[in-house]
Length: 413
Image 1 (cartoon, rainbow, N blue to C red):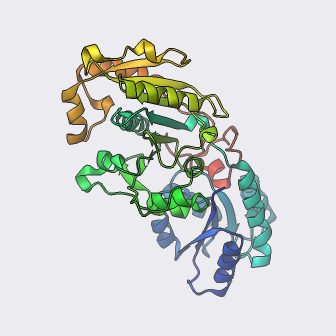
Image 2: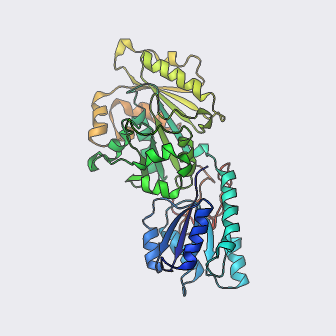
Image 3: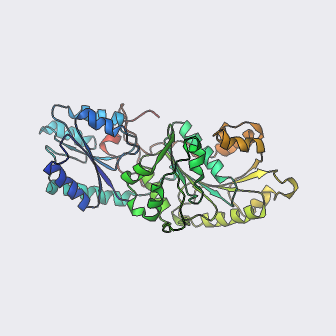
């Protein structure tokens, strides 16, 4: 289970005794805390800089501000996602109280809650979160490279670009912590900036919360973010449970997560926790065939039997020496797509900062059926925050909670 973050939005000064007492109680209960202080414009300006929405948000209404106006203004600038919402400094009016509760507020207080008042609410949220954590297989794609140089990162990059270009908020999780290729593919022009916080998360998956990811994630372009970093030999070995913890937490704020996993990954995947469609990318050579068979066998141990698709990349590179695609299909139950080698287009991928789906050449036609197998936008999955009302989403496993902001608002698709 990942740690929860409580963000407290308040007009009080940082040294306010009641505010410090509430923060201390949250820390004692295991929450990470984030204070956003100031008048309404100052608070909203800070919220607009967030990349992720914290799991729990306590909004203390500034005096003279209408409660719903404050919530709507927050929803207009906050990142998309789901949050358990607590409201404070709300007029002591039973009609207003019932209205806000009926819309999904976890609790409504007439003043900033004392530690005694806040503790039961925070404990209830923590218990509910511990039971709800899980992975929605419709909103994650795993890409596995069957050998070094198979091209898995190239396909993962194209998948992520496709999702983000469709308006889906996408996180690319680069598990090649020896080379960090995503930092180059997404950000070469800006110095291939890495996300060092990823290494800390891989070692301490219990620390995966909104604050931790907020500091680690880099933005590549609109709707597209990434985690990518290189591990040094002296660094502590990663925990295999970390990948699933990151995916489960990221799905609270992202429509899609693309996990790019190299051959002989570190950490070794926790195979039974892999939950979502997988793509095995292999070169048409003996190393590729061995890796393809090994990964396909390991995926067979997953608790949920999501689709597994094979991509035999760079066919024709060695012409007569290629292992035929049909050999990869022996004993394999999923679809297999051959993908031709195009040296000219492959070179442009890096130097022009393009993805496969933006390329022409002889590879364009065979790419279309591969893209057609990707998951469509999940209906009733992650709720959004925005400026127009939206109905409550249909619950799915691991996505049961629906907070006030999720019910009230929905940003553009």
